[in-house]
Image (cartoon, rainbow, N blue to C red; front, side, top):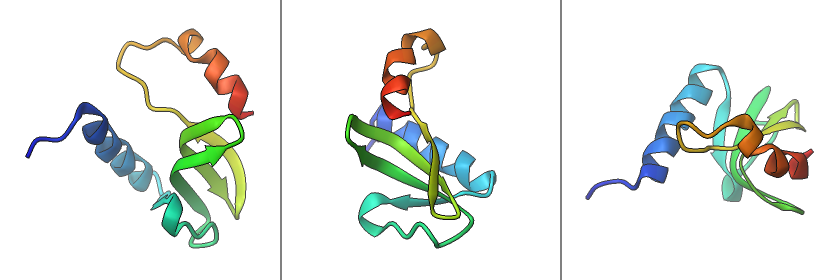
Length: 84
């Protein structure tokens, strides 16, 4: 069975986050104190879902949004503002 482009991207992003020292977790199984840096997939915020919520020492510090190659930062500015 072949993976969708979104599934392929998530695998790649997971690997990159793990290589950078983040512990990647599903939101259903999240433990924000499992390590110093935890990245939680598909985290529910008041304004929608962040592809990854980044937490350090149990505190949210940022969000990662996965977009297609070629998407400009100005193209996701509005979405990013909702997460701050």
